Length: 184
Image 1 (spheres, rainbow, N blue to C red):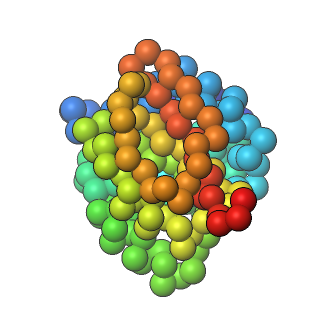
Image 2: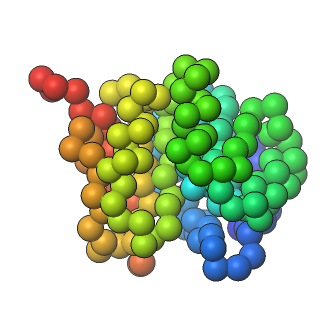
């Protein structure tokens, strides 16, 4: 895998071995970032189910200010650490090697907010209502929540979000949401 654009363009990053993670393909990342390009610069990124960290590292390369990477898999965490060091992004990243619920509980105490949220859960995880609801204290109506999922799958998200865009490339699809406030 490689970083597609920005200050780390062309740099190679690693992915965890085995079947527990499914790295976002370069072409999917490129197309996704073409969709959200105007939202990345200066953003604060949350990457839940981060795997290798490819999505948040791509955002950092393209000008995001900071990123928080969360994954419960120890191998993924170690690959993230290596990729962060390789790209020199230690000062702009924080990592959590734990369940997404614990990470959000820790972040809530800090009153942290995010402008971009990447969600790349296992494809079998279709009921994401709890995840989407748990994000609400961290985001505003301008925050983009980007969900990578299996093309053609029916994912269940909170009714408090509205779908902005949806695209698919082969077996992979991306749905982009914003928090919907009453009266909008």
